[in-house]
Image 1 (cartoon, rainbow over the protein chains, first blue to last red):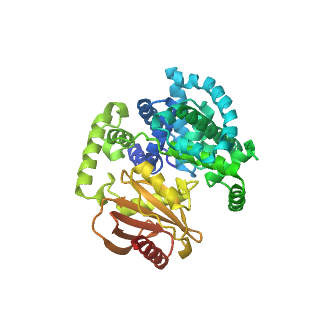
Image 2 (image 1 turned 90 degrees about the horizontal axis):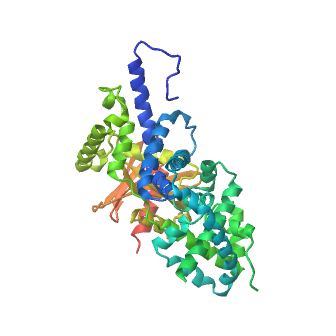
Image 3 (image 1 turned 120 degrees about the vertical axis):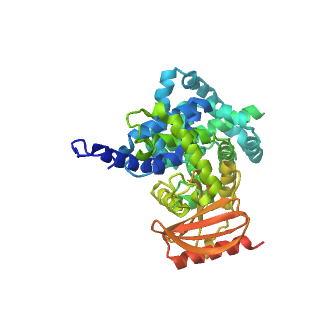
Length: 199
Length: 256
């Protein structure tokens, strides 16, 4: 659709190339550029900091530009976020970043804490959610960073990127049921960690 | 009396809060929650958690970064002089050119602010078309304006009036952040029968202007301004129907 068929030689290859390039630029503006903010937000949470996020998204945009003819319609945001996620993972693997490694252990603590949470919630239903609402950005940020990667990416895609369950399932290549249970667990662990920090 | 919420119940509650259940299931869970304090408390906690995460500061798309990305796909005419160059060698020059173009364009008038010279109406039509192609035309799905406004506030620091016009036949579906001519703008989404109406609200307009019908990119549009916003309603509705939607919106926002 975007590229000329490989066998199709013309008399003026540079004209064909120019036309393709214009078309690619147009698609790039329609499909990729609108989702830069979402890409940065996702990359920031996968990489653990905002400065790496720009490098990752820039890299992802290069991949997206080269792979524009792989876009088969549907949610452009999901397509773009899939590329950002793949780029982030290969980028993190290259950097041997500790961000990816550290998270597994903390999930156990969260699970242990969240097991106690429902009992406590019965006594004072409203103050519990008020306590969460009062949490400052640093507390919430630290609590998200402490989630296990599979849980964190579902939560970020939903509550920061605002993706639908269907889009999340597409980006992560998971059944919707798995997306739903991970999201429920992620929010529960996050609530428990925030409450623990606030008390 | 007190009880533990099961995993299945918690999953359904999350989907309820996200508006991701079927309409019938939504109603079933609404009444279950109303009659069960443990479910209501869990629902409150899920909502609170969702809100604090959504309120987190998001990394901004800096103009420098945007220029770098735009430069990657610079049209052939811009790169034709040096076709053999790799983008990494030439992006600084191209980025500078894009920045200057953007500055000149934005200081001229908003309507010409796209670096490709596309009209604002065409960009709005593009945005509306993209939203219809997406899995969901909204970032925040809610018929409750008290959810839509805080979402837009949290993401953009401003939000247009978002009256629910369900009784007039135009239920509020939700809101999204649209990027038009490189500017993030709040957009409200309404539905009328099977048709989707996007209301793009650009801030910073002081003068009020009466609704004016337009068409672009195969969609009908109405433009007007007031309340500090310049509004553009876009839909595949017939011009008359779209005009009467705008009349209802204007009436609802003007009333005290």
